[in-house]
Structures are given as structure tokens and as C-alpha cells.
Image (tube, rainbow, N blue to C red; front, side):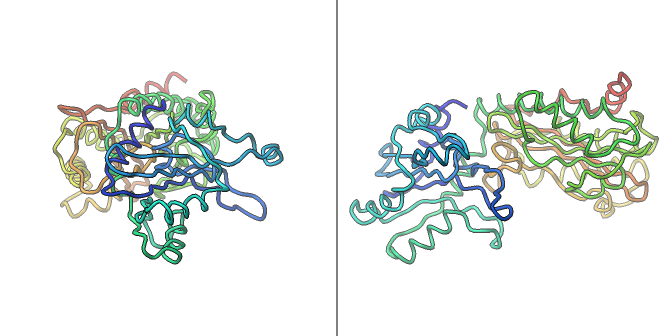
Length: 415
């Protein structure tokens, strides 16, 4: 993403505020893992959507005075030769401007003092921050901790939540985001095809994972867009499976729910294939049901459909497929075989932060995820693709990844 992308995003957010106020966004920090070791730092995705500056403990502070009237500064870690010897060089102000378009930088050491100065001497009585917890039990982020301090020390200050506005902005993808997603699809294709090429009975799940990770690393992608789900046989019945310890047996299906990142965007693809390269009769029956349902969805999706109906439409169509092969007798049976929906948006997050109660519109990108889990037959898998809503219909962004049963068998037959 170039800096114009981040500048446009900030401008849109600033102009959504209703009154004079201070707007604060935090990059976050790496949580402790154990003793003196932290997890790798992963910047807050909404902060990244507006700045593009990947550095720990960094803060965007913007003084908003009205429409098109604001002053912004990024608080960055100060130079520290000793610290930089251990943890790497710190970003410089000129790099901040190049990456984000933010011209003024200050030291994080001065953040609290500068904040209080604005509250006491510049007449600011409203503070905007991002409060995005999905569960009350989640650990407090910087926004929540600062809000608690403000309520105690400056009880007259109003605290307002940016999260609904941020979700609204992140819902529709811009051309540069779509370009990045398209690149991510091609990289993911290489990873999935690498697993297909290497696949054989006796292979361990961690070996499949290694094939996927290696393919991504050839593009400079050192970690997938989200923790890969790669499983074999009975392990496919755990929807979010991360053990990677199982061994594929002859006749097993291999399930992979994976994605690459590219230029901050993340895709999400699921494919299933027989470890020996040839579907059994029952595997093919179930797989074709999922495939036909997926293809049907890409035929009908277009602007104007309530998002809450997307999974329901897929569920009803897949029921008819399963009924035709004798598995379902009534619609009430569908829950036995379809355990989840999957029409979640993708973007800066694999389950992207978007507005609620959406109607499909051009520029939205979400997953079409058809899962079938038949415990009676010992077969579980899902087929998941990325759907871009266009002006008149939709586009399958993951069209290039082998999906049709005949294409999977043909590809694996060339090993």
C-alpha cells in the first residue's frame, strides 16, 4: 500500500467525527509469552489500516477541529542505541512520512504529557478511541486502559468509540486492496499445490504444513495470514485444528484451511483432496455436493443480498444436494452434516472487522465456505473461496486454485 491509501483512510475517519476532539490509535505491544520472552509483535490491524507504520508502542494522536481541519502526529519510540542493538533499528520520522504521509513525529516518552496539555490547555473535552472487544473477558488494550485513567483523572472528558466508523470504512475494499488480495490468491495457490504434489499415504500433517510454509517463504512471506488448519482423516472433524501431528492413511481426505498475506491483506481458502490422489466413491459423492453448492453461490451472488442470508442460501442448496444422494430426508437433517457457515469478510484480518447487518455491495470481499462433515462415512472437509461483489454480480478471486474433483485428480496425477 502506498501512503495515499493511509492518508485517504485517515481523512475519511477524521471527517466522520462529530465534534472537536482528540483521536487516538495504538499499534499495541507484544504480549509476554514466558519469563523474559514475548510473542512476536503483531500490530493492531485498524491502526495499520490508518498508518501503515509497523512498530511497537506507537500512537497516532490527531487534534480534530472540524471537517477538513486537523493536526496529526505519530508518537514513535525514541532512538536508543543499546535497545536497537538487541531488538533492531527504530523507525525514523522521515520514514514515517514516506510510509504514512504523517509529517510530524514525537517521542512516545512525551505522549502522556502532551495528552494532558491538550486536555488542560487546548480545550479538548472529547477523546475518540477504538474499543473493539468481542468478549468482555478479553485482555484490555491500550484504549481500555487509557479510558479507565481518563475517567479517573479527567471525569469531564467524553470518551467515544471509533470502532463502528472503522468497521464501516474497512467494509468496502479499495482497488489497491483488491490488487493485494489477488496476489495473495496466487501465492496461496502455490502453497496448496505444493501440498498436493507432495501428498502420499503415510505423510504427516506437519509435513503438509511445511510444504505450504516453504512455498510462501519463496515470496518473502515468513508466516501465513493466519494459523493454518491442515488435517487428515478423522482430524478433519475438528473445525479449528492446529496439532499437525496426525498421519495421513491411504484413502484419507486432506483438509486445508489456509491463506497468505500480501501487502497487509489476508485471504482464506479451503481445499480438500485425497491423500493418494484419487477420490473414493463416497468422497466424490460428498465433494461434488459441496462443489455444486459453491458454484451455485458464485452464480447468484450480486449486490443487494442481506449478508445474513448468504449462508442460509448455501445451506438450503446444499441440503438439496445431500437429499439427492440419500443423506438428508428433511431440512432438519442438514445440521448433522453442515456444522458451520463461512460468509465472513476478509481483508486486513482474516475475519475482517466490518459493519454489522450488511447488504452485499460492490467492493465487499467475503468467503463462500461449504463444509460437509459425515461422521457416519468418516469423511469431513470444506471448500472455501473468496468472493468479490461487483457492480452486476460477483467474481471468484480464488478461481485459479484447483477445485473441481476432476481437476484435483488430474493435477495430483501429474506428480
